[in-house]
Every structure is written in structure tokens, then in C-alpha cells.
Image (cartoon, rainbow, N blue to C red; front, side):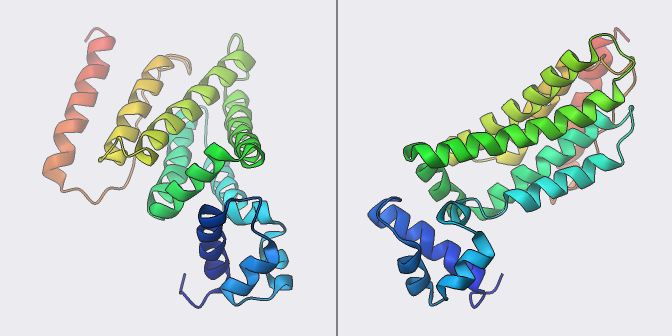
Length: 224
């Protein structure tokens, strides 16, 4: 977004003011004034002060739904991982803005509750789609719940490590976490092979060894 975009100006002004003065002390009027945007525009774009902290959740959830809508029984786990990667990439792409939001949600109970509710929405969508494609499996509802929870937990674990400055290679960490997660449920969809496709800017000579190791590990688990 361009700097002249009122949406971006409002988000940047709000986050900066929340960190400077505390979330509760900052009014929507003050945010609008600092961003040089009308109060009516603020409410039209975000609905509330909380909406300025979580401006993209609805759009991200729509992206997740879109990625899962065409999944089949054979591809649903790979689709869930791909959807989780999209959410992860969005936050990594935000950089310091994501870290500022994390600091806010860590210190303001109302924002922490809002974040918890948003995470529950992702888990619900994952669970719904997984359950649909495992409907003929034993304990399908329980399996779907466990799978969805594991993916969300792995995603949040890696993201929070990056937010705390404990990870310098977040995409590698995410891929490793999802490999571990998929390994937990590798046989739940009927002993089929799952191939996860993803885009990367890394050169092929760096990617291939990791793919070969992953295939080798998978083959070792199957005993051949």
C-alpha cells in the first residue's frame, strides 16, 4: 500500500500511539487526527479501535477458505499446510508491525482475547475441512480436531519464536514444524503419499537437498 493510503496511515498511527501512550489511553479521534483521516473513515475501514490492531484477519480467513475449498481427501492436509503458510507469510511480511501487534496483544487483555478468538476461527475452518474429507474414517471428528489443533499450534510456535527474535530463518523453521506435524498424521488419510508444493526464492541447489532428506525420512518410516 502507498503511504498516501488512509488505511495504512491509520494502522501505522494507531500502533505507534498505542506503544507510546498505552492502548486504553489512545482515542479514535486522536488516531484519526494523527493520520490526517476523518473519524468517519476510520470507523468505515476498521469498525473499532480493536479493528486497527487486527485489520487483516477477515481477509486472511477468506484466503484460507479459498485454499481449502478445492481440497480432496488426498490433498486436504497439504492444503491446510499451504493455507497456514499463507497466514504465516503475511505476518512475516509485516515485519516490525507484526512485532508491535504482538507486544500489544501480550499486554492488553482485551486484545489477547480478540487474538484467541481469531485463532479459534482458523482452527474451526481447518477442522471443518479436514473432517469433511475424513468422514468415512474411524473417529473422524477427533482426528480432525487433533490435526487442526496441531497445525495451528505449530504455526503459532514458529511465529512467536520469530516475533521474540529467536528465529532468523522463519520459513525454514515453519517448513520443519509442518513436516513434524504431518508426520504425526501421515497415515490418517489411508496410507497415501502427500506431496506439499510451495514457492520459494531460494536457489534450487539449496532446496533439493532438503527435499531429498524429507523423502528419505518418509521412506524410512515406511520401511522401504
